[in-house]
Image (tube, rainbow, N blue to C red; front, side, top):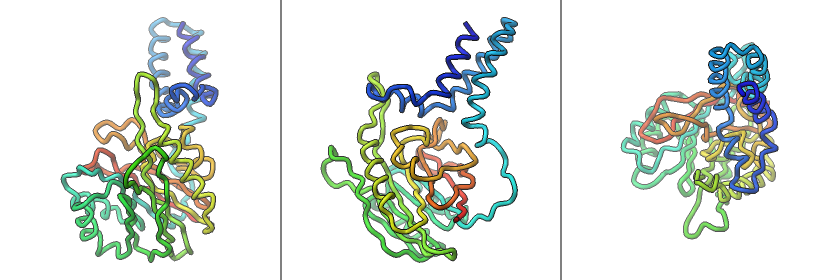
Length: 301
């Protein structure tokens, strides 16, 4: 039985794309928590030891190899030194954050070049603007998302990622060109709709539709280098974010589980890039938000 479970776990890790997504978004649900299958491997290893089952221990080599192939690289230390052209911070600050000033100071303390924020609402928005103004003289806000930069911003505009079923005012995407010392970079900031885990499965249709709209905007971007920062309400393994992950590079190192802040189980706050590498992603200390901030180093190509 233990050996059979080991083989099934290896199959799920290796062929998770085969899990159907047509009913209850089951495939996306599995992929959202895919790394946690490693915990199941540990439990199976304990059972195999208790039963002294050589067959089960040998069978466990299959899921161990599959998990290592998929996620082992994220745990490796950096190799040879890599030039980091930009440091960026992504954070959903929460519209119920009791300490926006403290949150802003904490993010600025990481000394990034860019800070992307979501769930910006008055009067907290004014607090973020005042607190970040000295270190980040350039900023743009559209709807509830914003970008603060140490480098000049041009070409700021709204990116329409609003699903058809959403009524009323709803603006959660912006694009700006950052004039860095290494050239122009198109920065996208987005907050995709939330997903819900229900008895019927994963409710993610709005998120998936919004991801498709954002993917089309990135594909049409004329500036060669693109950085995407956002609360995408999905992991990079979730096929619902395929319109984005298929077009962009993801982090080469680091898990950076960001949600919920009290006990993070998934990274739904993402930094991705085109014609650039996301060298390493990491979490920053908790703020007054229910998300943890993430910071990532970017190397431009």
